Image 1: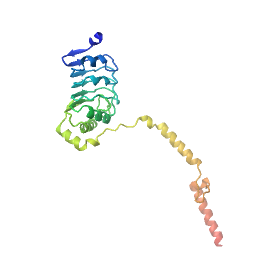
Image 2: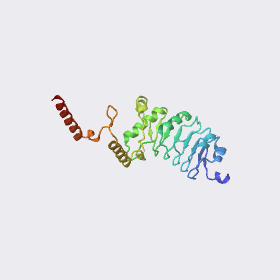
Image 3: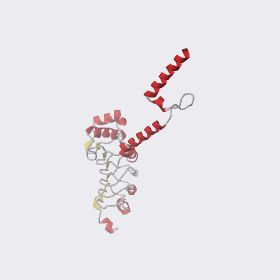
Image 4: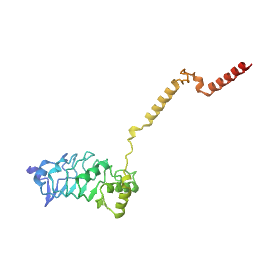
Length: 236
């Protein structure tokens, strides 16, 4: 434990354990510092879970930038947490994340999600613009109306009003993966459909299959001509 503790930067109630490639929060951190830590910085690791936070009962600030946290992220209830930065992780489901934070971090005032796919800005997606980012802000503020700062910007009164009125309709919908629609697949499907149409026979009202010539213009014209000749023979 002594060797592990030598990797910790301690400044009063501020704890930093940065750049050690850990995949989960080491137990000794909670055992040693959990009861009094107010600020915890775990940036530049390889964290996939924050389960070890359950011992940090007094935590007010949590920085977990540049990790591998995904949509299965679960935080313990942290009633005093007012600052959370999750920049540059693997978060894509913004709605699930915000609903979870609303439940476990009731005092949250500052949130930063830059560098995640869930945050549609040009750091991650060059095809996004300011309108996309503003819609994201409205949706976040609709879910977490107590926020005072979001990412690098202070929340304005106008944004709060817009979020209350329109935020519920501002959810950013992810497009379907390209694999779900492929030109080659579409071409194959169309070809199969055409083959099925060509090989099928049209069924008449009395249940008998009609000949192929009835399904093209020449066939229909020939049948009409034959029908008129039959009528003439019947009359005379």
